[in-house]
Image (cartoon, rainbow, N blue to C red; front, top):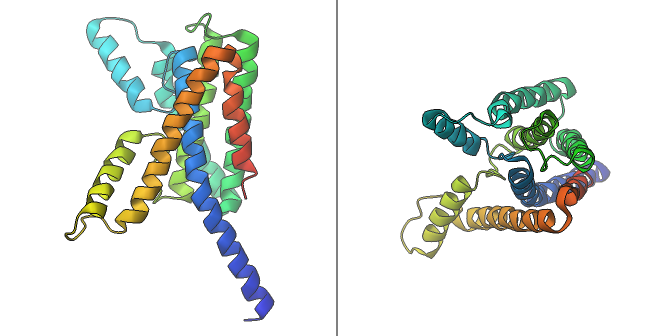
Length: 234
């Protein structure tokens, strides 16, 4: 193999490795922001469909009418994931060349959420039809992120479902400090990855909640800016 081709291959591999290390922690911050801003201003979990299912079930059993946005979040999430699958099949790309178009879609969706939120102020009427539309766009953005990681980085921990990440972190920590045979392979590396996601998600939640308190509907701007940073990530 010529030296120039070998050098180019090495550079591409290093770029891909840096991309894979930086992307999940950044996406976990975005997921934390979007989830808490959606919860505070739209009344549902935009990045945590499990939470919406729990609330729907509880309201149905108690006799209260479920929030329409919560009901629609489940099929909309599935449809958005299916759309990502179709995009992946159409583009036939791999690695960061596939990730960036989906990151751009997430950025555009969150930008729409910001624009509509500033115009219509969904917190004033969280059950209005426009609030439902805004919520579904935010859910679609998070579905795009979930599907992106499952297709692009299938071995990466979830950037939004922190129960699994916390379990992995606890098990990896125990294997790291234990002198016996570890139950999980590469416990040290696994611990570092999951801790980054846990810290990133929690930091995103704190920042998102603070943004809602300080700037109201403009809080979505913080998630938009980070989503834009993910698109140009090198």
